[in-house]
Length: 412
Ligand SMILES: Cc1cc2nc3c(=O)[nH]c(=O)nc-3n(C[C@H](O)[C@H](O)[C@H](O)COP(=O)(O)OP(=O)(O)OC[C@H]3O[C@@H](n4cnc5c(N)ncnc54)[C@H](O)[C@@H]3O)c2cc1C
Image 1 (spheres, rainbow, N blue to C red):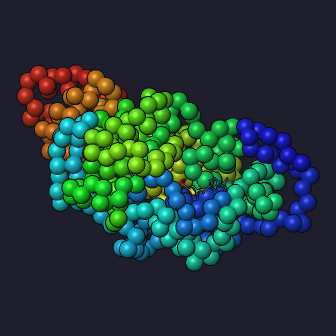
Image 2 (cartoon, rainbow, N blue to C red):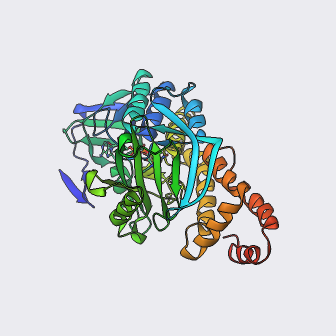
């Protein structure tokens, strides 16, 4: 028997428990958040089911840009580097504002480049090798929090002690907990195409970031082994014309938008849930809203939060206090909330229309600001450190521009 809440079936308590497969932890979603949670929980000796509606390898719309910060988090969780054959890298960055070049930096920093199809399949393999039970090609269709039961689309029923919702931006777990997966007024949205390298023969392996390609967002070119991932993304409600924006961005590069298959997906662009879970249910990755509000980076936070959720569960069980898992997780996630909160402040200096010309000028002139941006991506600097950099830079900017920047860029 089932009732509907916001499109999600809620199973009532009159269930036959004999057919339920028991697990200590069910992880819903096998993306970076779910795979790292399943790996960490299995390593801690827990019985883990890793549930995904897809079979792996599967596609996931994403730029596939992996920061050095993300690399460090991956190595901290797995104790080994990611395979070189699935992650390339580029150390050349070009920055632009609506097609006008701002600057180019070579050799200062690098960004890993992957195809999510291969990257995510590798992470799922690691979780399964660690002992997680894969439950693939079967979606979580209904969740009963009081009976701690997940019913799959196939009708299979799994029981849990703790549930980790890592099922992405449209999370069924978050919807069942809170009534909706995300706030439509604040959600981000991205569109991408995969362009064969031969279509842009003059491209020189540079990563491009164009701050003017979308409102409260940006455009990107990420070079991969055989293709270029080209996209635009930003706050959804401010960019109702995102498809036209992508078309214009492609046309700027001499590409005909009609030649490419355009794919789109929401991303929680800097809109974390203040409570990423409740009771014995923890949300990780996009399901918790953990995406950087300036760069759109979500893979690193997904790996970090998935592992943190699993550690919180394992610690709560070991302490004989299973109901403390959420409080432990919320504490462990404090640095993520802090970083996203700081970035939300910084984006007031970058994204508002009246700030863009000033930002473009400062970014063109100020090497420290450019390096700061890349350091954030690399994870060698926190957003907090940028205030000092900015102040030092302002001291070198003469006259009117300094006064304008100083006046407008009051710390939010
Ligand atoms: C256009 C675009 C570009 C991006 N570019 C970058 C980038 O370059 N670098 C970066 O770091 N981040 C980027 N991001 C963000 C990044 O893709 C996400 O933050 C990241 O994938 C989050 O990982 P996750 O594991 O939380 O969710 P996901 O990767 O979305 O994984 C969720 C998993 O849950 C499964 N699932 C969903 N519903 C169910 C269900 N009911 N039952 C079972 N399984 C289910 C899905 O099949 C999926 O495998 C981009 C996002 C977009 C939209």
